Length: 320
Image 1: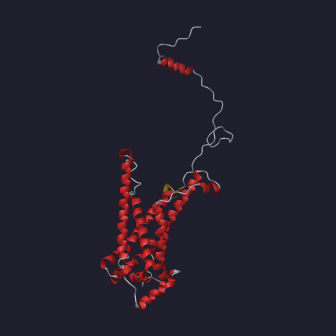
Image 2: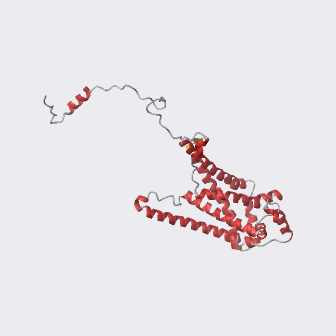
Image 3: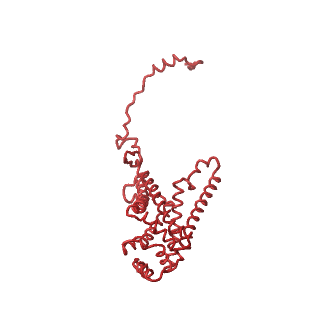
């Protein structure tokens, strides 16, 4: 039989339409099951879905997950802490640096300190923001760890141990190191006078200078570490909120400038931020260590009262 010849001219649109109508549909023997109703012996296993983040609605603000709320808590609490720190550093470092006199600086300190140590302002400006800032950071880390465990299907305790913890950033590491330093500083200069004398109205820069004179090594090293870590945490934290850290702003320029230029800009930004850290820490220490730290020991009944107060410190107060 002679082979069938193919038509040399394409079919007209009418012929194509008729041919389409003449083709019978092919029956489907089995209808695929709806998602979520598959049998365990089905050929196609159910599609694994990652856990959706928990969302909350508060005061009509919906659509935000736990991470959003925790990050906003950290950010807005840092605003109040920055306001307090600005007033505190001005009173305890900048004014002594300008006056070069502890008694004259104590006058400004005693005049302005009641504004942020009042029964109303201290919880709102210091205690509550500090507590929220620390707890939100710890909770955010635990929540991200839990989300990673759910994402990888870790159900048992042994499975969860195999899931890596989220990476600790440099800012977070500085915050974890700064927390016990701040608590120790507050315990000596705020809680100790409140516990022994019922208040800190008689505690000023002369009290701090007396402690530097009686325990020079402990006071100088502790103060330097507190100022250094605190300056780095505050400056880098604000750089992160403002989008100035090396991780921000350069991803879109990689294709335009290349990796080498991008890395050069990151290094320059890193040096710029650390330069600000060094400036803030140096200015802070110039007044704190350079003036207050060299104020000397107090004599008379005032010095004896300070010794009695420092003697109440746990462990470190045994040398008085």
